Length: 209
Image (cartoon, rainbow, N blue to C red; front, side, top):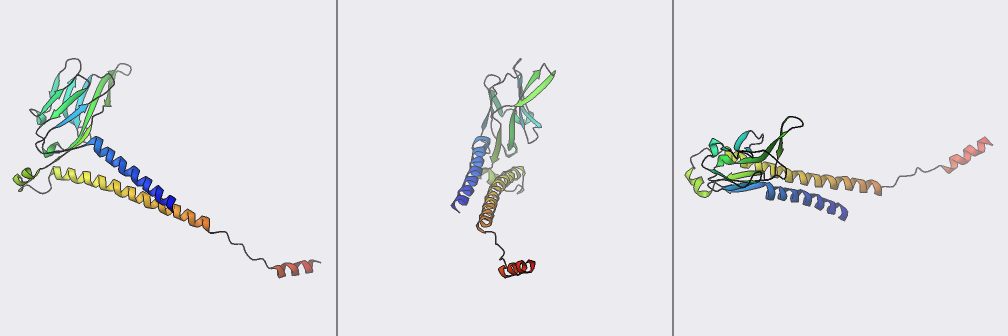
C-alpha cells in the first residue's frame, strides 16, 4: 500500500509543480495603474515584430520592423506604451494599466521565406498572461459599476482553469489508487481447484474391467 501512496504523491507533485511553473513564468499580476514590461526575444533572424493580444491573437498592440525601425502603436495603447532595445530583442513597457488590459500578450515575429515566397510567423519568448486587478481605492471609486465586468470575468476564468487542473490531478491520483488496489486483490485471490470424486473414478474403472 505504501507503493500506491508514493505513486499518488508523485502524480500530485508533478501536477502542482507544473501549475506553479506556469504561474511563475507566464502569468503576471498587476494592479490598476501599475505598469508591465514584456520582453520579446528570439534567437533567429527576423524582419518584423508584432505584439498581439487575445486568445486568437487578433488585437494588434505594437509593431516594428527591422529595416526602417518604424514603430506603430495601437490607438488603445498610445501615450501608455514605450519600447526599448535593439531589434529583435525589444522591451515593451505598458503603463497605467486598466482592467481592459487583462489578457494574453504574444510576441509574434515574421520573416519573408524566399524558398516558399511568403512570410512565415513564429512565436518568440516573452509572451505573458497579464491579469490586472482592481486595488482598494479603485474598487471604492467604482462601487456603482456592475458587479460582473470584463475584468471579473477574466479573473473567474483564470481561477476556474487553475481549479480544474487541481481537480484533474486529484482524480488521476484516486484512479491510480483504485487500479493498483484492484490488481493487488486479483493477485491475492488464488484459483480454486474443484474437488475430485475418487469413489466415482474407482467405480468407472471397475465397470471398464
